[in-house]
View 1 (tube, one colour):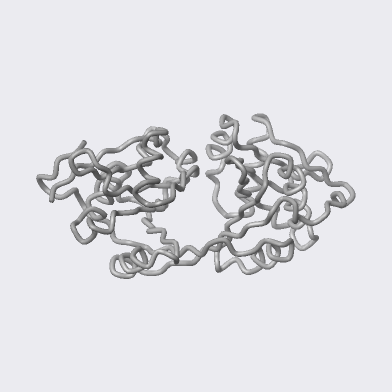
View 2 (tube, helix red, strand yellow):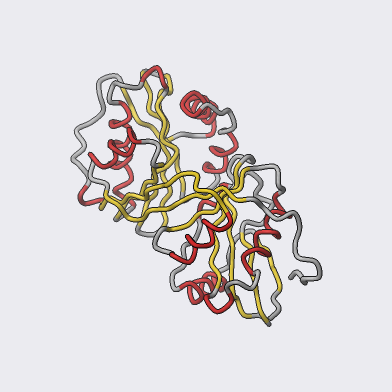
Length: 286
């Protein structure tokens, strides 16, 4: 059987319906709009005579690491569809980055592919908390305020993230948040100085919390808990449920989130994979 590959920046409403019909549930992959290069396609589609038989998304927020999520129709597996989708994505984004295959642990077929093609790197827990079940907010510790970030404060927020995460490429990420009406970032301030950062992304009835950081020299004071509690309080106006992701290696953060009432929604494994050097010769591209 033959198939063609198409690429697009983001899915149209019609494509969302196609993806939902194919995989039974459409996960919008909102994070792809935070890619380091927004001119490169984030979605790759395999079609057989116009019918969608598989898709793959790329999330590359830093330019150094690309996370790949994919689904192939059961009757089209073991026919090279995933390999060709990945090859086309690598052709667009380049090999000079770490490539990670993202697999929800519920998808046994995906786990089988991942263990065949890659090496386990780490596990991520997606935790959920109903807005109505969030802990009562009693305010921030004395001397702290939590304010919504604006463009003039993006460099301050970037500096906090750089100190906390050990990298210095966060300004473009924050600027992408500023131009998206669904997203906001907040600064935890001591006096007029930014000491913490947190981001909210509202998507229908769910709000994802991400980009949490407190300056290393201010950690150990309970300010991370205060920052998260403040974000839950501010975001509750716009959502029914909060989501947050945490790596299995970050036991301190996981303990904090669970102590505030977050519970397991999904478990995702990340596998580092070797990427193909080029698309299969002779395969037409859409």
